[in-house]
Image 1 (cartoon, chains in turn cyan, brown):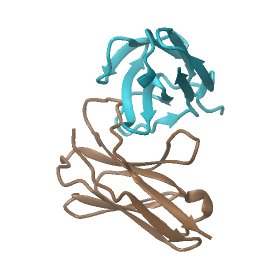
Image 2: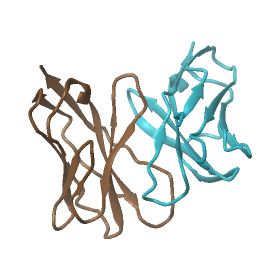
Image 3: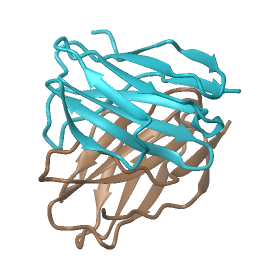
Length: 114
Length: 112
């Protein structure tokens, strides 16, 4: 079974631009979560989607948004990019919503904001 | 959210066992204990999880203290490939949230 895939793997943007990142979960997985990883803050939860509905949201400004499609693929969008948004953005999928469900992470998208 | 405490770093020799400790003194009776690890330049990967009893899988063992206020991840024979950051995470049994709260983790170095 193919793992979680994220595109693009690397991205360079300038301040003020917006960016869209894509995540394809493992086949059959219906829940997708997004995380931001920076050297200073570590791994931080952004949001989770299940059946096209946002279930949980982390403590990030409204410039960070996401959505999920009927095939469970998910996108996250960051508008009005700031230098501090430079980070590794990770997507994780799980089969359902049980707390014991294992989360499977993709390789991430490395975003650099200049 | 319940918090975990782990040592910042540990060292091990290749092919020797490694015991990675985690303190979680504020754990609730219904929290699962999960371990993930992140290899260099990769996303985190699941290692093991447990609730009350010790658990074993092909990757590692998880030993949970009787009062559940601490746990230990055991790698039976460390390899160079096990060099990674190891995260101990508490997950509520209820609420069905996918949110994982990562601390700083323990960076494990494995020496040949």
